[in-house]
Amino acid sequence: MTDKRRNKNKNENNSVQYTYTKEKEIKVNSHDNHSKGSERYLDVIFTYEDGKSWEGYIPIEDRRAGINLSDSLEINKYLEKAYDFCNPEQTNIYIKEQEEFWLNSKAPTTKPLFEKLLNFRWNCVCCVLPGNPNPARRYGDLKDKGYRIPVNTSKKCETCQKNTTHIILVPLPRHIGFRYELWNLKLREIIFSLLDTYDVYEGKKGNKDNLLPDHKFPEIRWDSNTTRESLEHITDEEIKNDFQLLSNQRNQQKREVCRFCYQTGKRGTPFGVKFYYQGDESWPDNIPKIGKEAEKGCQGSGWYDLETWRKKLNQKLNDSQEQLNKE
Image (cartoon, rainbow, N blue to C red; front, top):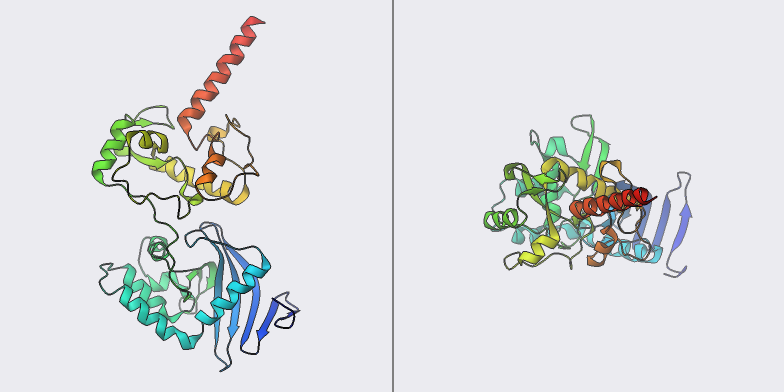
């Protein structure tokens, strides 16, 4: 973008004022992160010729939507497009398109939540979903449907006067980046049978009522080319290669470890044991962060494949003991 089209000035608060053309005025106040969702946003104000404006977060890293922008020119082009979509004069068109999408929906909780977000302003989750035990799951459902819903984890609510989590619907086109792989009860039984109800964390056979199938390759690193279209024809070999059995508690623990690795590049250590049968604690520089190729960066880390990690570690200990005995 040339200097003729854009003037860039910093104000006293270090915000950046972008003025593209006489009809496009974009102010970027700051950056924000949602660490749980591994998302990054720009806090913006879009001002239009008629004096109307839109204020909110524009996602520049959103795994579900396949967005990960860092180059300033790419971000500028993206903001220009977002500016047009967020124009209050265009929201009626957006609402009509979404009404058609939800026409035959049977989502008794998710659809009403979506309708409350059509004000395109920040909404307190406690006030929008009063009494709901899991509001994060509800707006997660909307994200899975392709909606861009940034999160501000500490914003004062004008209604309840508390600092709460707020969400905002950005009127950008829906984008389905990828879907999670889901299995039915029949396939679940097949997985348990093939894996012999073996709890890989405990290293012994467990109670299948306390276990669940875990994708070795963490979903936080998936993209649209990672998810299988269907698990209907998955082979026994694929199940053995791709899944392991964990308790729900350990599955949640692994999820947090993998999120930390995704955000920091530091691979996890089961039981605090810093052993890697391939690579070391740092994510390899030559391996992409997301996508099917990223699975190579997980290999060697204990949480990726606990049983292989245990066997490799025991083998190393046995070799060391044999060496000591020879000496």
